[in-house]
Amino acid sequence: MGRRWPGNVSISFFHRRRFFFSSARLALADPTLAQDIHDPYGALRQRDYRRLLIGSVLFTLGTEMQAAAVSWELYDRTQSKMALAYSGLAQVLPVLLLALPAGQAADRYSRQKLLMAAQALAVATSFGLAALSFWQGPIALVYVCLVMIGVVRAFSVPARWGLLPQIVSMELLPNAVTWNSSGFQIALAAGPPIGGLLLAYCVPAVVYLTTAVCALACVTLIGTLRPRPSQLLEEKRSLKTLLAGIRFVWESKPILTTISLDMFAVLLGGVTALLPIFAKDILQVGEWGYGWLRAAPPLGALAPAFIMAHHPPLHHAGKVLLLAVTGFGVATIFFGLSDSFWLSFVLLLAAGALDNISVVVRGTLVQVLTPDSMRGRVGAVNFMFVSSSNQLGEFESGLTAHLFGPIASVILGGFGTLVVVGAIIALWPPIMRLSLAPPLLPVEQDLSP
Image 1: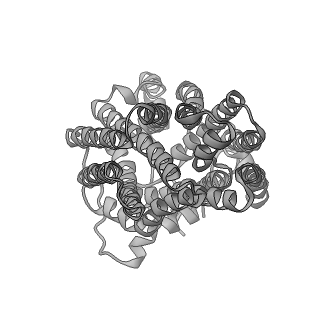
Image 2: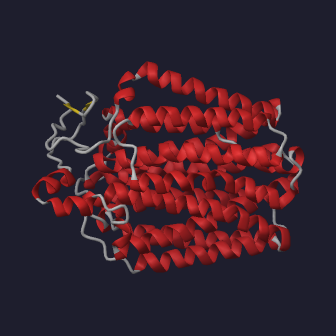
Image 3: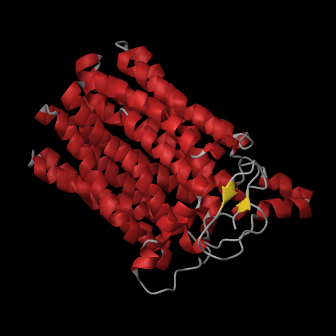
């Protein structure tokens, strides 16, 4: 039998073991510790967490600059909407093919070393893009580099996901997830305008070389971490252990529902892949405006990220999540209808703010409900959902823009997001009562099938 969450949301898992949410018990034992647990800057006071966060921010900053440059250069050289669609497809296919083996590797081997190896591959890939750009190499080789970026993401995300609980305690894990989101959004916000600025005054190769430097700094910082030993997977490699993360997520309806909602909403409602078209052909704002349009969603996400670090949306998390995704769909529709740069910028700010609420709720839920020995595999499944929504969303956007035009593509995607919200409520009504208020987990759970 599954145990009940606050709000009568049922949870069941496949793996039998006891799992404790230590913050609730520590708070009962010592009120002073309870104050520390609720310290909104608790995770940032940890040396290794700061280094992991800084390294992740630098890497994301570089990859966002690089993504903006690749999209702009592809469209500039080919004038093809499908070229943008294929760029998303090239990056997502390695994730879909390799995420599960990468998650198993993250549970079997050193997550720190695996993450460093992935970042080192990112450095080499950026140098390759710089060479292809400078000498105007074949477009086909650019797609090869994009495939390698997908390989980097397939291995680095599960490793980083599993490494996080090795450097922060369980009671600080929700706070660490929130600050991860903040750092990620800062990098997302800063990367595109910096990339756009460099594109305006330099050749794209400069952007790719800057990305290589950021990735190299990330490798160095990760190498200085001193993570606690983790409970590594000792079972022999098998199809059962490979697919264990999928089964775990399938058995946990709160996790399955929230990541499905996030995946389909962004898959249909995302507009990032079409921003070069809107900047160049519809809003006519050039490289500078393109960079700021790319930066708008993460800029909008910063404010709710800091607010949630101090006042997490715990008690009515399900309702807040559904309202946020609904607002995301509405903002997407009006972005498609806008012909004003500033209105489009504000609508993208709003979309980013609303989307980040979903990111924090989902990230907290998955991290806390996952046993340490499975964090890599569950993180890989979670990443497959997220990456599918982002990169397959780019392919979907490019394809529908090719068939119906960019404006119709965005508007239809926004309406699709609203349909997804309605479908989730119909398929799993308990999401309306989902609560993340402490105690987030019951003290003891039956994790049987």
